[in-house]
Image (tube, rainbow, N blue to C red; front, side):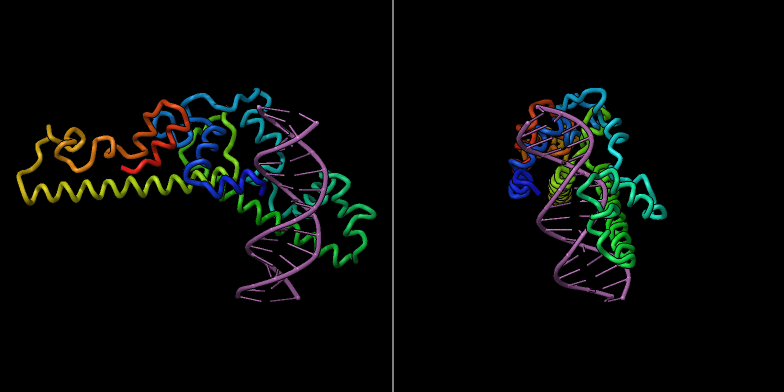
Amino acid sequence: MNVNEENLLKSISNDALLDLTQRYGQSAFGFGPSHGTGSPARFPLTPATDFISGQTTKSNESGGEHTSDDDDAFDSLESRKRGPSFGDDKPGGPLAKKSKEQRSLRLSINARERRRMHDLNDALDGLRAVIPYAHSPSVRKLSKIATLLLAKNYILMQAQALEEMRRLVAYLNQGQTISSPIPTALAPFGQAAVYPFSSSALATCAEKCSTYSGTPSSLFKHCNDKP
DNA sequence: TAGGCCATCTGGTCCT
DNA sequence: AGGACCAGATGGCCTA
């Protein structure tokens, strides 16, 4: 992990997300209509390096293009692709000095580790799939750290929205038992003077973000504001 | 060209 | 003993 990522982790709630949004587009956390078809990518990618080509050219991208059945073959293939310092199957390489059994064991361990990392990447892909950000061919795939940080914030945001809804339901129930039902025209969204929360507070972060058209930095400030 | 991100290898540690 | 997990090292690819 590099210094920037450490800083991101230390300041997840504000600066980190600011940074991530700036890097991954203002439609990060964009809901509804903007989801996938929203604002243009903040990463002006050339056609040759867009998301699609990135997937195809990056042979080791998560998702795994090989199964565990061909691990051994893949192992030596990857070793060849990686270059001289990974001489596990080359004369003079680390494994060359070891016995055949040790080498076999090492290759087996490597394959297992590779499989484990592929599983981890599959899980991260699954997480990316449910995180609301611009899933667009022209937008770079979220990095691992960005995926985790955005997922965390998304969960916090959903929890906040849920809490708002609970408070709203509690308020409505209270109003029905104590006084007459609230007329439709006086629905909470239009009754800041009566309803304990402001209309802006009623709109969940998700709703706010879905209609937001400002800069990413102010978007996340917006979402982090307490009602 | 530097920096970010990634996949892989590797050795160590812990757990079953 | 074998497998899972982890962190460090390394090199490749891509972008600004």
